[in-house]
Length: 195
Image (tube, rainbow, N blue to C red; front, side):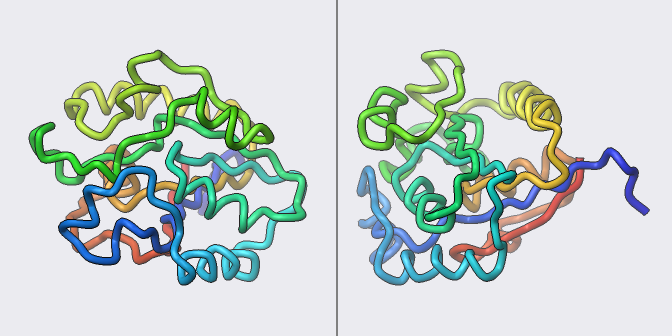
């Protein structure tokens, strides 16, 4: 039985992005948008997870995650935060030179210009520039702890996070689960954790 003050976090992987169409070459595409299939997957989230104006969605600062959230939340005046601590993360962690261009994040200044209705969460310039993709496990654990504390301070029963397969697995591992690449979510797939 869950404690009364337990928060449910629903991680959702973004819809299909252009960067997944012809790997490994397409993984070098930066600033990938959703494909037509990805748009349909984002629209399907309206039925899978109906939103109200009281919901909060936290979004990774990539175009494909932002597009997923905006399509899903269209016509619902819920709160949308863009947070670099749910940006792409390699799982398992590899050397920085093995990072893909598709995992470069949008800087908060670009997000403010392209998506003025979204709220950017303040973080260090380093995190907003480089994200969490290749930071050490120790550094990730520090920022993951800070992020989960921030989430709890939102005082929501249910919180939605639109992110990436590797990032979701990294947070699941941080929260004590034993996960491998076999646990990656499909496009627009979801996974629930409790804090």
